[in-house]
Length: 103
Image 1 (spheres, rainbow, N blue to C red):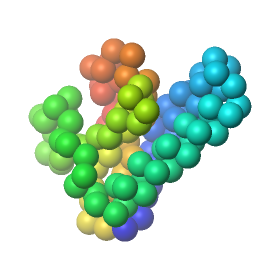
Image 2: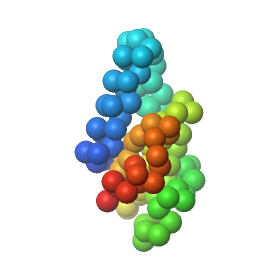
Image 3: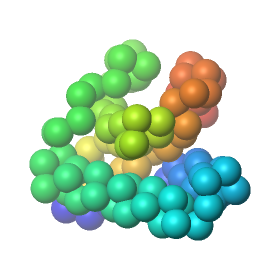
Image 4: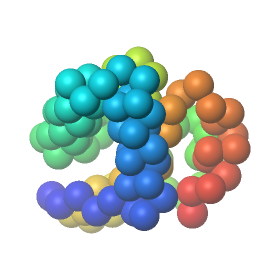
């Protein structure tokens, strides 16, 4: 399996990391990035580990998600041998607005 990050997901991850660095410092940002890496490894080992996201049930493909550190959400879908990371956002943001941006 391989991972492909969609641009909007990369931007979301960067925004969350930047916020953490500004608010809590470089050490916490580094920990956050490690947490993201650990979740990605879990997904690679077992792609169906994340529950199906109810925000995307009207779409033909199953979109799954994982929560990182209780405050960030990563949304992905599986296509053959590829995991597409399609969304990444701070869970304190309006979820339907965030979900509407995912194609």
